[in-house]
Length: 255
Image 1 (tube, rainbow, N blue to C red):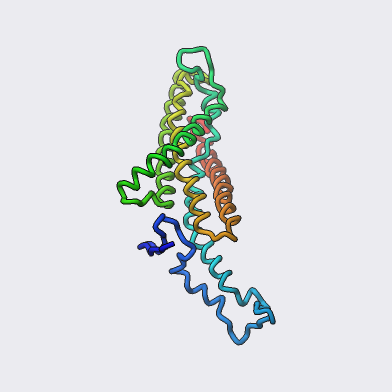
Image 2 (image 1 turned 30 degrees about the vertical axis):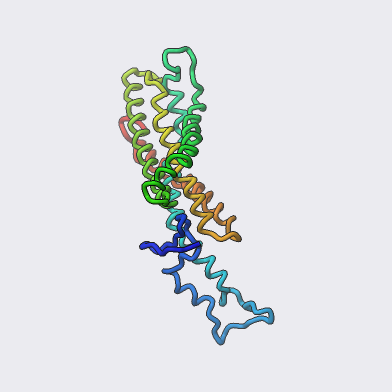
């Protein structure tokens, strides 16, 4: 590995792998490993009170955890935008017929479009996009943080598309004065396809980032960071829905 210090403080090797050596701005934590006259050392060399004196390994691991917190916070924003609970209800209240045929796509099956988008895009990215980017950038590929950022951008676009489709569906429902909109449920497919693309960039980028950032004995923490972002986003998502319901419960157009 040949590390290269970037402008933002990360240490990146030739393969854009983020190293655990990215500890430049957290040197003050090294004081936790400095032995003072008050510290007691056991015969085996360990600290008698681990709360007062830490090993360098513990300090390095603490630095590593702190450095990934900002990126893990962006995962919360992604998961909030990735929530698709209302797609089933939208499909139930739309025309589920496939074109002019009599076949109706089950409302819960529309998630398959996001899965298909993810399944099709991953090999395309690995075989075509990565090779193309390496030719343009002279052997380099898209960095992990760039992949996470691209996924967030696609998720923002997906949310805007979903909001526009839902507004048109509600308008058509009110005009018809019926519980079911004449609008085709296939209009939900564009936002689901974008959700699959965002997952291919952001979620895979997150997993790759955590596993490259942590050393081998901390890989379980890497998985915990990933799922903690998902859990926290569910609470934030529920809070946002509650706020919207409270603010619109007295509206003339309904909650």
